[in-house]
Image (cartoon, rainbow, N blue to C red; front, side, top):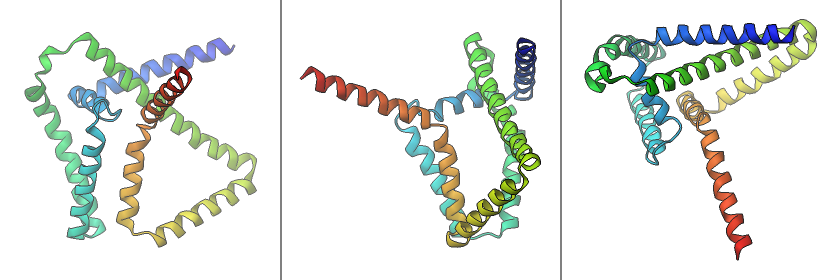
Length: 196
């Protein structure tokens, strides 16, 4: 019975991954580039990313637009990106040289995104299961959590808070890389100490 459930889950994961790959047609090279940038393949990627974010947020702070203007500009930027990327990417990256290695890498990226979405949906379902099974704990947790969030939101400027959240979310994808770097560095130091 368990093997049948695992097989169904695997088939669903494969189907969702294939669907995502199909939806990302025209974005393949962008996804591969993002996959190189986010795990810090080069030492200058982190400062460059933080620099871009800082420039965007400093510009926003300097212009001091209203919330509606920010949302409008952001959605307009998304629409332009969605329109221009599939047109410009083949001309910039010469996508006619698409290899099986690149296709495999894209498949791994899409599979990872689908798994992340499944984890988020799982947490969401767990939250509602908690609501059904332990109503008092659910409400106390939600009230305390949102009271803390409201207090932090009142104490810290909205733009700074958004900047910190965006920076943290971008850094969250690099956590594994950072810990593996420290682990390797720590193991090298231990080996040097034992050798001497």
